[in-house]
Length: 319
Image (spheres, rainbow, N blue to C red):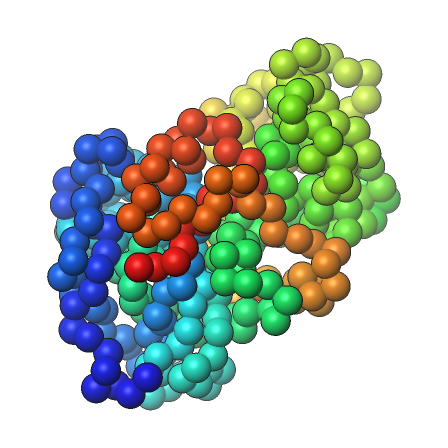
């Protein structure tokens, strides 16, 4: 795409006030296309995945870290490079890329997220899309898989250890099971979900699928080297940790000694995991309702906000 054919405005979902997604997220047919810095590329967005952080931001949870509205939400993107900054080395026009474009939620807010026809992103957060994944599948991965990977690195999860993943059917949990089993080599992977989702957990590699509607995981005699909490289970999570074990969480409330952390987005993780994606050892997990067309972005958020989605919700095609 020649620079001359890149429009100055595009269709985007934007919010000008903070509040509930259903109240404040609006469709804009003429929102500015972002300019790129010298280390950035401009992407024609094909697919954008939703994450809980997106509606938390719209609610205003991180508003002291945001540029002034109006803002386009969205972290995860898969699309095609249409323009490259002068210092970009990794990519050229026409490359199919994916990534979580927001390096740090608190330190690096962006006005232009991924729920638009075009978005800008630093080359450091983008990787080439694996050939065996389509754009919807690729868009579903970055934030969630990078989050799980960073958590396991912080926990020093290693071969032969046991791990309990709380919220195993969610966006992060469904990828965390696969990473624990197939990448980090955990000898025993347990995960929680509701009754209908237990077979999914087993299919992803869980050795023990725990139905949280019927049993209390913290009362099991078995304790774990690592507990990874994607839900915010507080004291309960801590009770499942072995003596000398570790507990990490991506959602509160937490109780000591659990450590809560925020992701630093980097393409390095996606590049390291590329062989696992290409071999099918680690697979995207998509909610049965995915993809939602661009016009149904509000419905996609409503489904995410039920907190009962399976795996990831992706908006595509755009527009």
